[in-house]
Length: 483
Image 1 (cartoon, rainbow, N blue to C red):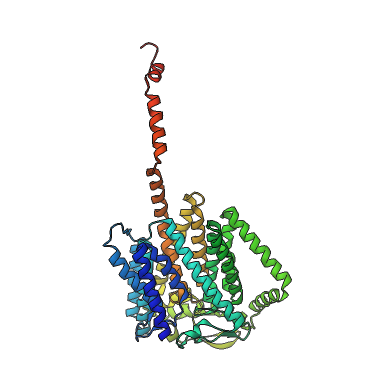
Image 2 (image 1 turned 135 degrees about the horizontal axis):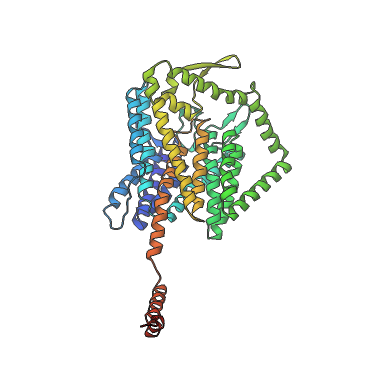
């Protein structure tokens, strides 16, 4: 507990120091870094609602935002998606009131407000420039690089950084213990709650790091990001998670078609390096091939895990059909463990104690209206990224590609893992959503500023040309002959 308090003090001092020196907007990149690196175990337990380090960061940002509004020059824009955010909050509140597990649903509702919607509000209203967006992305990438260093220590030194924090029992076992899979061996998870969650965050962070490398101006920053990228690729492989591997591939495809030439070159270099590793290290090739063969084998643990999701959707739909009212607003957020669903895979009975799909969880916990609401909003955000890409000129369109890739990767992972509603990866999602929604207005503001900021020499040149046009000689030359 002393270690957690010490870390919280460091976070507190760091954010207040940056705010005092550079202003509130400059605290957001550092806040993004802190929001990524700390595990769920970094908290001060208070019973119903624990103060995690992420929540402490959020509370500090709220306080700094309030006091910063009194200072001259502090800008806050209107909140994008305000009506839809309020609609989601209202529906989750309604689902919580009618929940079969009210306490757990209330915790999930409070987490929705403080952990995610407040973060979205702060990042969507106080960022005023594209440069700040890039610094926020650099903070996120820095956090994932640090987590990847911890992940490599986990893989090669059999030591988890989470052992430094108070031990607790959660849904996947005891915190700090190495994640050992009977079929896949050691799977790294760093400070995240599960290897799949860590891999999913890396599937979003790797394209982000490639973008930052392509746009970095300082050589030392490029070297730092390239080294970090090696750690990230090592860790996403060591998570032994098929979903993040596929999500990463999907994330890189848009850059191959629409990215800057240097980004396409980087991806081709990475592909060449990956092929070289597969040839030089046959064990890597064998691991990937064995995972594929196990996935298509219905009687293996990986194959049953794959079939588990299809059976899960069937059971969820069946459960909702039992009650028209539950089909409307569901059984309440985080109520899935209390449903005690049971089914069969390959003729073998099984209790479905975990919901390995955020889509299925949203469906059964918030009903058809709840999942339709979330689905519409998430699709609208994705279309916003695509529409901005079509309207933006190069190189401004590259951030749109990144946002589109990040959102697509997260949405894909929602179909096969409970990725939404807890953990650092959900905070990452809402930061990306905020950046996606404000990016068009930031581009318009920069274009307007560039038009208004005409250099003095150009102004003098325009004056000289105007005087030449109005000179007597030019006027007499242009007069009609009859006059």
